[in-house]
Image (cartoon, rainbow, N blue to C red; front, side, top):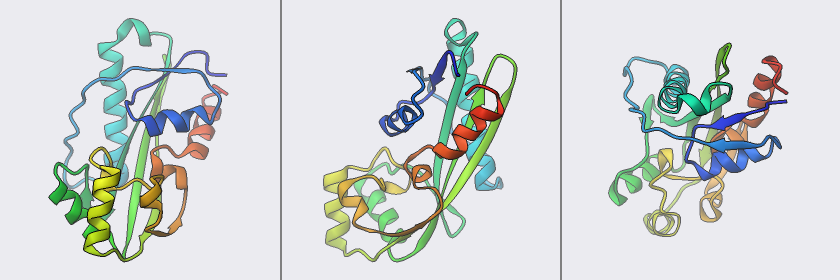
Length: 193
């Protein structure tokens, strides 16, 4: 069993998902730059950013992380080989949702587990199909859900957002922010559970 788990994320969605594993944890965060080489494949982007977050938290919170297992994650949305990050404005959110509607896109979540003796990274990819949305539906979603902290400008778990998800192929929890099954297996491989 993980004796001292730290989640390196402010995301309430990741915190709720981690609770599904019934492992007590505390939250520590750090501001990590999320720049990356534009030639990297999506799986490298999310795993490298997750590991970078873990190393940053470990460096900033040395005493709290010395004997801890540290978990960090990063999620991106990809369509037509273009990464859709968190929108900075209503117009950007509208453009992203307009681009996604009626199409299939990919959601990648990478995670890094860092222990005193080792580090492990992995990722999950899920295909998500959006149904078509009218301009008024997109605007209504932006007003109600305020998706400015979500990659791709939507949350699959949002009441209104769920109405426009036509199909998913892969892990639902990955789209929310943590691929729980793969994460559980990773903990098992480290003999932590």
